[in-house]
Amino acid sequence: MIMKKILMVLTSHQELVNTSSTTGLWIGEFTDPYYEFRDKNYTVVLASPKGGSPPIDPMSKLTENLTGSNRRFVNDDFAKDALKHTVELAEVSATDFDAVFYPGGHGPMFDLATNDASGRLIVDFLSQHKPVAAVCHGPAALLKATQLEPSILKGKRVTGFSNAEETLVMRSNNIPYTLEDKLKELGADYHKALIPFASHVESDGLLLTGQNPLSAGPTAKALIAMLESNQNR
Image (cartoon, rainbow, N blue to C red; front, side, top):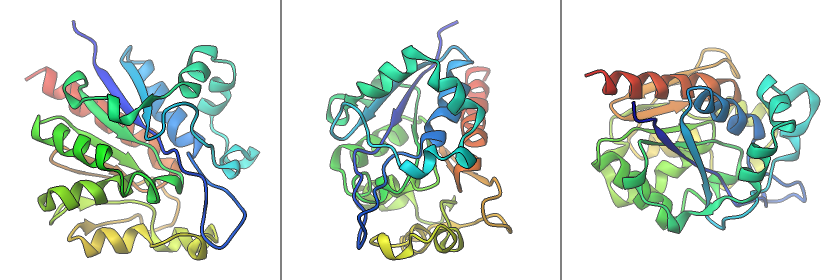
């Protein structure tokens, strides 16, 4: 059996607006899906706009935000080395992978939302009938893709970090827009959990989106289920 190959696209951005606090990748939104894929023996390749080591949101390293996969990562030299040496996004091609996954953190709202290589990559994955998954602020990457191909979000059921969650983490004044509003503005059929920070995943065609950090593992599981089901057809 040929094993699947997953591309994970991470942010390279750490600055926020109106504050000296920094952001970047939310580490659990990387580690939870990463180990879901690794435990299926999938090959995982990590890429980012600038390549190299992505910035990590300091808040995601606080004890109360740590998950089992974070602890596993700390002792995994292979994974730590892969995260330190991400490939430059411009060097990867959808042709070489079975699916793409975008973790969040506030970083993607700045760089992946406007990155040409990322936007083209998403368009390419979908045109090759390959799934695109994104979690929390990762769906911000769909903004650039939609600029290139408006039908990507139009009328599609999606989710992403909600306005209520943005208010609760007190970052509303440190970001250029709210993701929920922007997705709706672009014609998406946006849905969210009744309770902030509860796990919530939406699936529409080849598009899989998760709302928040707790949705990262479930979104990866939904992607695996889609890939395995396609394989069995």
